[in-house]
Length: 353
Image 1 (cartoon, one colour):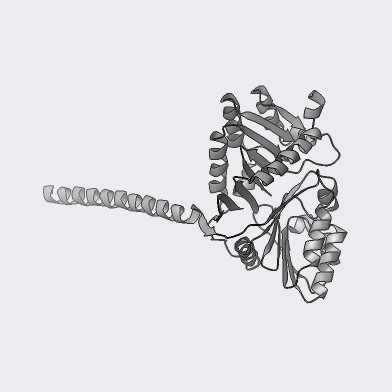
Image 2: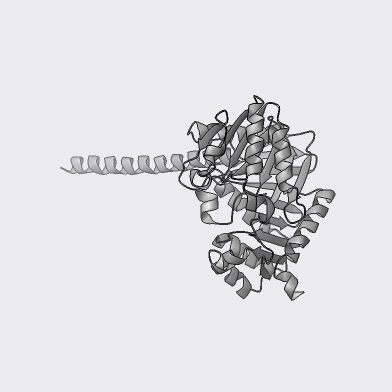
């Protein structure tokens, strides 16, 4: 009997040890896998042409997209939440008629009324997923990339506050076209976050929800490390970790300012708006006609933008993107600082001046 008990006791001890080892091995493998998946894929580039356009500083947003599409010689890939502007649709149709491969990926709810307006020779892919298909991405000829906060709608391209940046970058184009391929094939995007290194500049691209945790932590780290300023223009702001990071930055003496959309500051973003104001963070809302539709932050000399609102869904559920330029070149920084002034002038900050 004693021998049997000892045998069972030894067996239980061995099983517990085996279970502990299994857990430790699983944790180690998960750590290694996470490190591999979420550490940026670094590509050095020799040149990086970049253009900024904002609906608040220039009326050329629609014309720029129209021109880019009309100049395509090989392919157009448009991944956009809502495509409804007649000028853009006409440009896509005419480009497809020139035997250029045109494919569009869109949120079926947001673009459903426009689908019938596209030519049959345009490849159309409604994206049905857990969250919104919220990207605003355009790739021309595997080289020219547009990353925007704007949808392809009349309001977004004319009245709403939006920011777009254009780059000539085959690596970025390849990454976004790869994302399109996985969406079309209904597969999971498995590529690591992309980092382009150009001289002293770093360009980071995080594709959500796959890189959402990594980009959220990157943003928090940058806010926590800010020494001079954190200026935020955000359509929907509900994420508590980002709100708390801004409050702590303000307490450290950083110049923190946040501009909201007027309706959002009273509805969806109301908690963040009021909490920031209670913490003495200067907050304002857009007073000019149209939505404040930006999803953009200037952190010292670093620009963070893209399609992602600062919400839990933006990082964890939606098809979204954050693009970071660190640091901005002197000419880029000059443009962004002038852009920020124009956004402030179109907000309730101007009334307090």
